[in-house]
Image (cartoon, rainbow, N blue to C red; front, top):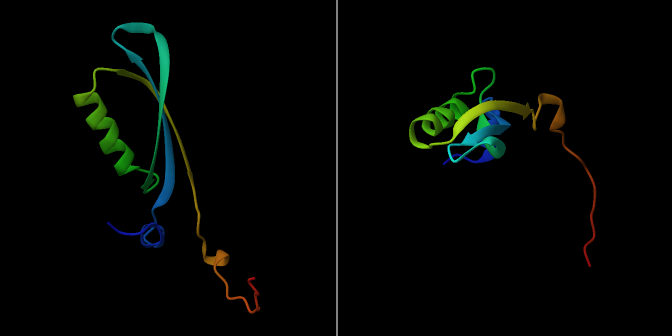
Length: 88
């Protein structure tokens, strides 16, 4: 499995999906499930595959999904630094 740095350099960004769902036994109760994966915006294929799996394999009915993603590394964020650090 590639490291997070490798994925970020390929355009993947840390994506958080908050899934709101109903269980069949408690249809009036809205519950949440949060998952974080590295994914590609704007299509979000990794999260889409997970949601497809959820709909096919899990009995809970999805009410809605809220997505958030962030660029952790950008071109201007990496720089060299000179310094001396002393550890005890």
